Length: 271
Image 1 (cartoon, rainbow, N blue to C red):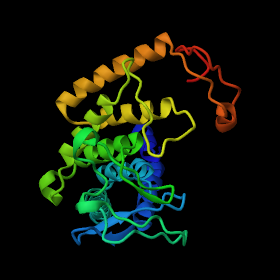
Image 2: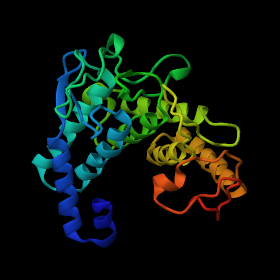
Image 3: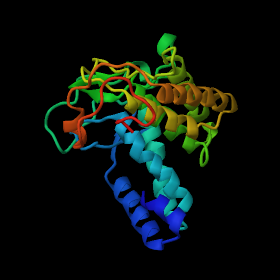
Image 4: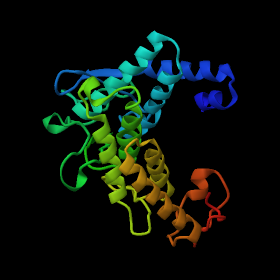
């Protein structure tokens, strides 16, 4: 928000504070050897675990910070942090990562065969797992991790690095992530919230929001066309309405008035 505020207003205070936030994020990164012995990097998301989905949202800002900074050392630190995170996501770990915020083990396993959290085979190909979830490793497809890190982070990274830079197929991972999301859609354009174990709380707009942001970030021409198709389907769904069951806890979670839980329209209660 700070960096975007600077781009809109030209207020350099926003720029300096935004870059200072990026500096802090870099300083909070943990390092650990990947399965191949390279230096990988990850973050404590604040929930005493490692979520690749949530991390991807924050880490993508480092790409913007890289472009907006004029300090060579600062730019280099952002790029190095992004490289370490990319290596962790794609190369996994040698030993289960630790966090200073908790003594509870995150799990007992690292991704097999040095594959990291990027799925490359079968119906799951293109999707990403979420790191460590509910006390164990999470390798199965997670919609939000696929959108934020798989598509957004890796796609934005192609503006400052290439597959040959680190030996990581950034473009292919990004394109495959978008394809997986698009293939997961319902017939009416709704993107389901996919995670294992399944979250009992209904999620309606979260997967659509993160996923559509990932389409905007994609640099693949074919994916962009497919993304426009998704926007069309999703927009029609929003405008015409969709039946859904009541979502218990909406008002309590959002801190706002009770939501309408019948047919939703573009001018309905849920923006």
